[in-house]
Length: 164
Image (cartoon, rainbow, N blue to C red; front, side, top):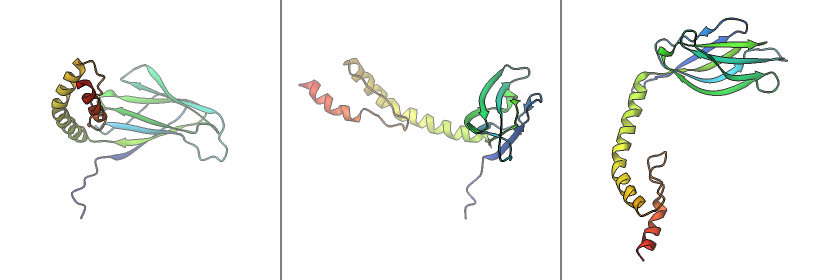
């Protein structure tokens, strides 16, 4: 079976109503990833607009995340990550409440990614040393791509030309 697969992400949602004070995000002690803001109305015809703001910490400055407008921009993708220590809250001004949708993550996932990053960095040390030598010859070198592979593999032909 699939018993070895563990779910580390949990659905998270919050309705932020206009005209109220800041609405705190209950993170249950876990990192929060907010993925979407949507005008929260089931009405056939929406009207007006709503501005969603975020603040971090008690009495923190408010920052606008998005402005949603009926018939134009009724939802907006976000990719905001908050830690439980940040005490994040959201405020809406305008005519319609906003639903925020995302997920609660686990801290352990970050540790797994850090291990992979460390291995990539260790594996990339030899390549970096070669790149530094090539760089001294005045060549433009792109050291690493996002996937951890070198992007300058085609430059090997240039090395032969330099020796002539």
